[in-house]
Length: 424
Figure 1 (cartoon, rainbow, N blue to C red):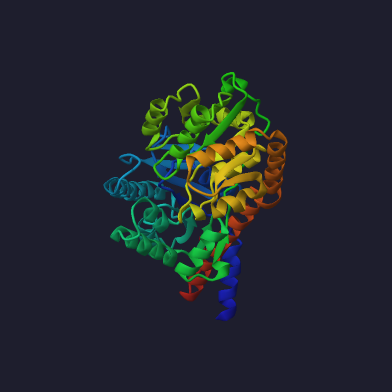
Figure 2 (cartoon, one colour; figure 1 turned 120 degrees about the horizontal axis):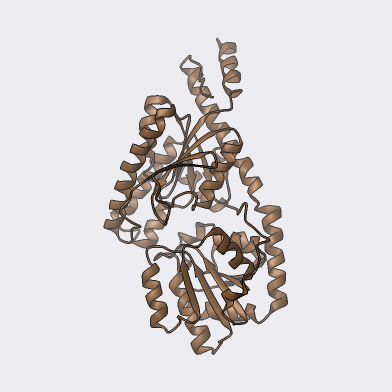
């Protein structure tokens, strides 16, 4: 009997092709670079990949096949900024995700369901398929959801403890866990009571970016320097600090030689535009909203300095910011608020501001803008660090390992039940 079980394991593991369902709620694909890169890596490894995500930020087609990956998108009421808004958004996401998973299953069962947070409630979509079809679950921890809620509202809020419960339920359901960085991994292992080998780090590193894109000097509007920002514009992203820093730099320090380009959108975009205009910065701060990849690559080639303005708090200390790695990919020095993971990612490629303070952020920008040799050296350090230590190829290897562990979990479950786990 033992030898027969071993033969079943060997046979099952030899069958690589399997269907994968990826669930993501906070961004659509392909806009979510991490999820899109993961989906592409799994497709290249021989998996049949389907992604379910919301309709938002210009990506509103309900169903399409893009680069061999099938995408289903569901309606949500909008990006939440209040507690009531979050309830409405997440309720719509659960209903939409479950309905899309029913449509996607017409082509067959999913062997692996890959849950991307936030939020940590998507286990409610995976659980029925786990019970009915034996689908294995991978939990992709992009952010620590309880810390995100604590930063927005309060740790004393009862909702915080519901987020902890949802996180615990998802970790309990998961056959394998991947985390964006080591600090998230440490928290996951402690709170989920996971062994070290059960949680792997899959870093979000830029991939397929056009590093040879041409510069676009028109973005400087005739000024000597261009300072860039790329990212979400919500109440937790600190863009207000950057706009007020631009005011301090131009109006109080009298620097009329600096142009700002703030790319991206989000629930606070209109308010931040209004703040820019109220401060008299319309001539100095361009806010084009969502931009194309071609525009982004030209902008990143053109900027003299990148900025990360995510404020210092418990949540952001655990976040690896995509913008930080994108500045590094293009060899740009940057100024960041002093966050644990920001410092780990950028190392000596950034200048760190110790407090959440717009004036200090502005002074850090001036310090680097006025020292071109230092900026160039920091840019070289960032490119080298990204290539040698943080590159996407390393993350692909860890991603494949997580899927192999999920496959082994399915095989072992089938062996215990005395049947072949023939999906793998």
